[in-house]
Amino acid sequence: MFHEYRDIVTKLKQEDKHFKKVFEEHNDIHDQIEKYETGGNSHIDPLEIERLKKLKLKLKDEAYAMIIDHKNK
Image 1 (cartoon, rainbow, N blue to C red):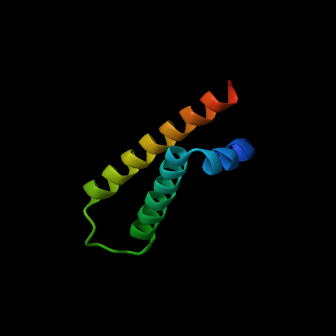
Image 2: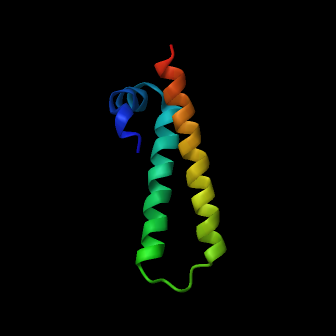
């Protein structure tokens, strides 16, 4: 995520606990969604997957806003 901002992401993960939490939660949700979609687990409610995707997008937007804020300082 945000490969073009790799240096800023690395710095923020080291210096900003909230950014690190958001970034890691985004990645955890990404992994969870991928596991559900590729694991063939038919017991997972499609609405739950959709909810996770929306949460993942919200976290990505939040992380991006923090990156841009840091970049513009």
